[in-house]
Image (cartoon, rainbow, N blue to C red):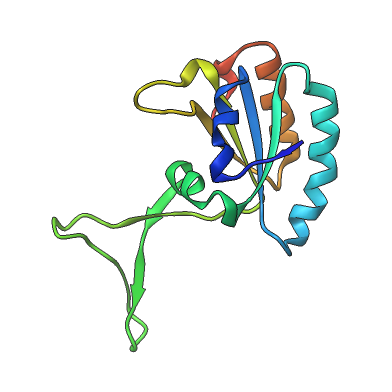
Length: 146
């Protein structure tokens, strides 16, 4: 499995389907998931390209596709509130879930999405990823939902 960094994101455009394991150095749960991911790679490597990426190496990509939630602030008195932009809308920030799997599909690439993001999946549930891989193996993006 190749290491993915910002300088080689073009690899995501080459394969029909790509899966990226996003991990953090020092994350014990990430280390637990890696052998499962490697086993899945062996089983599906004919149809799907597999990559791994340390979160700090691809932060811009992660931030672009990660689920978003409202940014919050807390006053000294303990009151919590959403941070709003100039228009009064909540400022949305990425939710960091590590480990995480991002799936990309060549058929979804276009002007609006250079890499063809098909969905993100909680890395704590490799069984969910295996179901996604089976759907991709069958060339069925309709079963791939984040």
